[in-house]
Length: 310
Ligand SMILES: Nc1nc2c(ncn2[C@@H]2O[C@H](COP(=O)(O)OP(=O)(O)O)[C@@H](O)[C@H]2O)c(=O)[nH]1
Ligand SMILES: [Mg+2]
Ligand SMILES: [Zn+2]
Image (cartoon, rainbow, N blue to C red):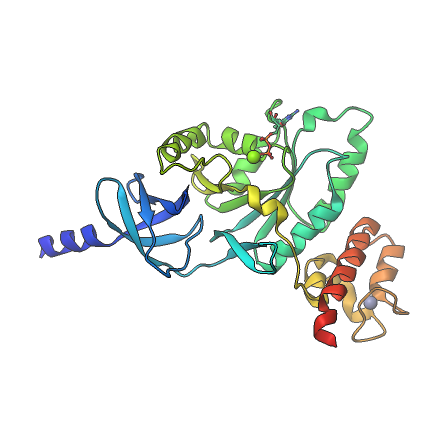
């Protein structure tokens, strides 16, 4: 009886996709060992964060036999109007920015719309707080305050001052999070700090893989207190093409208490008279900056949707 079980376990194993080796994927087995796994012909491509079933071939190589159902999937456009999956099974979208002028409310608001649609918990990080001066700090705080008020979790952090890192670690514990934001804001530095060098260990394993340089590939790292961080250069560009006006609205959850007060039931809160959302802005209940992003995103959504409405 015992023997049969052992054989079964030897043939099909479970693992976590942590990175890529060119055309194959890096699968971490339950004991932490990393295997280079190939795909079967016509098989759906697994992405970082996927839990897969796989079979051992020779040495440290294997074959993927199945991808277990995903609870979420983050994709980006491939430039030809098709969605290219980037990472799966994500809980938290950590939006990383640097202080103004790098900090872009419009970009943050775009990411927030995506997070709401993907049912990921968003979190906003302003890294490089050491760059703030007495003169620039008040404006930066004000900008973050608007997001705290919605409310979204907001953290001000610095790799150099070691500020905010404990708050980050607490929020990320036990969850799988993807870090997104413009390049150069410190995403990889934050990961290296929070994983206490584990990133370097995985880097060593990956570089032994088949040829392809992996420093620019999507990668998953473990947090020492439990949970995973995903670093992906690709997500910076993920777009919201095909998004509908209704979907844009879902990304502005602080508008919700006012929606029933609009005169027109199909009010889009753009130019309609007696709009409760626009009145809320006049009364200081909604941030004018957030509303500006809403208007911009609605314009894009309407342009996208013209093909459908005609
Ligand atoms: N001043 C300052 N620089 C930082 C901080 N965090 C990262 N950096 C620097 O910003 C640059 C880009 O960091 P990196 O982690 O590669 O950014 P990424 O492109 O978002 O992954 C590097 O030179 C880092 O040393 C920080 O908190 N303060
Ligand atoms: Mg990076
Ligand atoms: Zn309205």
